[in-house]
Image 1 (tube, rainbow, N blue to C red):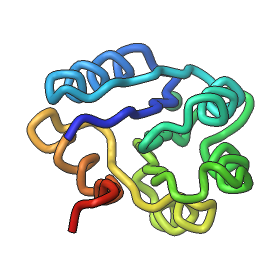
Image 2 (cartoon, rainbow, N blue to C red):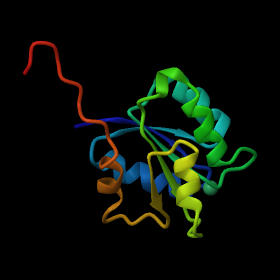
Image 3 (cartoon, rainbow, N blue to C red):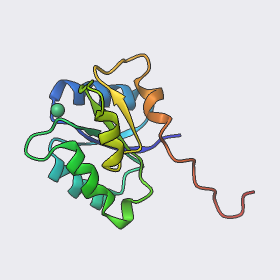
Image 4 (cartoon, rainbow, N blue to C red):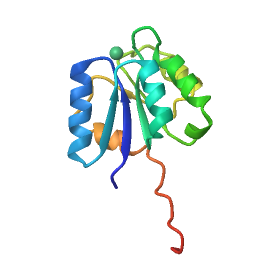
Length: 130
Ligand code: MN
């Protein structure tokens, strides 16, 4: 099933690779380079999932996650942290900030899309279907 993802990532190479892999599977990606830009786009577009780099300029991913979680219309939208921080406690910090999970960089092209898709909400049942 095709989904709309918001990708908040300041590194051009990572943005390109993630977008390429997800687009191959038919997903639509809205890119954002900074946290504030991502928050604005999330509010406007209510994506199906938000991929969030943690190491961002001016406003880090933890702060972005907290801001996103404070927006009522985004309450059900999964937020997945993508970060190269491999230090103990960062996963917990991401979860405590409101992220639903965590994918480690470098992105593994073999498994990345499946890792992301595992966080999608189940499709909404249409009226009249059982
Ligand atoms: Mn970054």
